[in-house]
Amino acid sequence: MRGMISDLLDAGRIDAGTLSVLPVPTKLAALVDNARNAFLNGGSTHTILIDLPQNLPRVLADKGRIVQVLNNLFTNAARFSPGSSPIRVAARRDGLHVAISVSDEGRGIPPEQLQRLFRKYTEISSDEGRGTGLGLAICKGLVEAHGGRIRAASDGPGQGTQITFTLPVAEEADGVTDQARPSRQGSERQPVLVVDDDPQMLRFVRDALARDGYSPLVTGDHRELSRIIREEKPHLILLDLLLPGTDGIELMENVPEMADLPVIFISAYGRDETIARALERGAIDYIVKPFSATELTARVRAALRRQSEMEPFVLGDLAIQYERREVTVADNPVRLTATEYELLRVLSVNAGRVLTYDALIRQLWEGPDSGDSDRVRTFVKQLRRKLGDDPARPVYIQNVRAVGYRMEAGDRG
Image 1 (cartoon, rainbow, N blue to C red):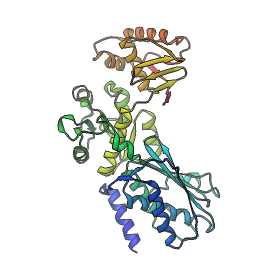
Image 2: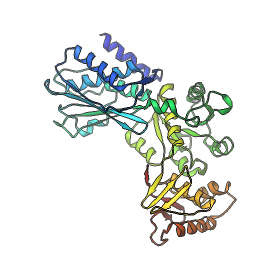
Image 3: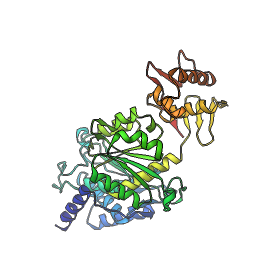
């Protein structure tokens, strides 16, 4: 009964956005060991097999809460697995996060149920009886409060299930530069723009950002976006997906000033296809309402850290080293003018997206009246010639007839 009440309270806090965590640098092995001991002391007949690399970095974690996540995952795996089968725990470095997986050899999950596995009151029948239907939903809320993600995978009935969640790496979070973490001195705080037509949400996000050392800029009018970006130069945008008369994805495509800025969508729409569409259009992250202040600031911090550590762009033989402003083709250096390099940089940073002539003019020449489409075409022609890109069969810079140009999404790192 105490466990059920605790689950209901946690679920309520997650829904209300009031659940808080206190992450500190922690060794993952200690968390896994604590969770395993608690699980086995509960009388389980399953063996927990642990495979953690020796060089795994510390993670930012609220110890009690992550032990709770692991315990829930162990319990869930045991309910759907034969008593003699092992439960496996593994981890690996995944960029700025550590990915932790819990795998079983049980009955597996049909593909159609994977999409709703982390929703409240979702129950899959079990020989061990029914639970509250809250365990995995609570895991999702706790992981996201740390700035991580959680997902499930199964090859189908009889093939077992693997649930993987991520936690931020602590060493990088502790040792980032001033560019990646906001200064506590007001004059040096990183500006973050929040666009949402809900006044209550604007206040909540503004206060959370201010408490964490950022300089929040807020507006409920999407028509102010271009002006605010030009005048205030925010480092990141938190953008509501649905706004009066438009949506966030449409704004990303039509507001040229947004082209270079990382965008995190905030929305009440948590459907996987909506999130995938937003990320495919260039968003760096997506947070589903309601969310806690801890999750919000963790996501903002991670996004700004990735932005400050821009990895090289590689597309075929073309490589761009942003930090050194170096461009090579087949390892041969390419000498570009400042405008040619900026054109290539803007196109590559927005790889996969079409940039209109107007968007490129605003990006390159600081205003809509500073050039025309012929001027853009001239610089693209010069740039292609230096890159060895055949205009008849371009590899790097593609024409979008009567609209603008695009580059294919390349590799990072």
